[in-house]
Image (cartoon, rainbow, N blue to C red; front, side, top):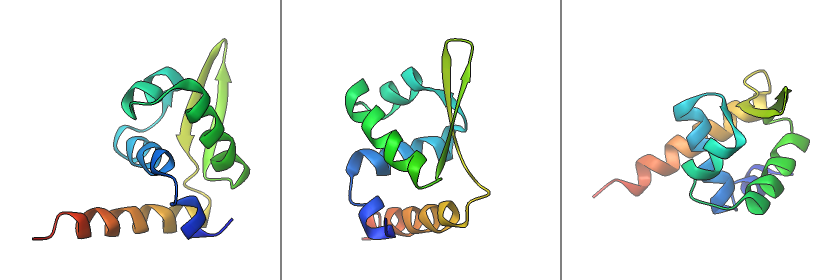
Amino acid sequence: MDLESILSSGCRRKMLKFLLENGSCNIMRLIVGVNSKYPQVNFELEILQKEGIIIDKHVGRMRIISLNRENPKTGVLLQALKLLHSMDHKP
């Protein structure tokens, strides 16, 4: 999937920003943080996981989500998000 396709989802953009700002978190905190619902967040997580952008770990019954900073694609996505954010806040 190309960069534009990954960033085409508002929910995925919110999730990436949330993980960038807050680090690893459980899935319920992510759902609340992006103001969405479990089915939508889970769907978007599956896409990001297939692309290797996030890491999904299970600790007991808890599901912990974090950015995969070892994947070069993750770095490019985060730079693009920062650029988009700075463009949104220019007068």
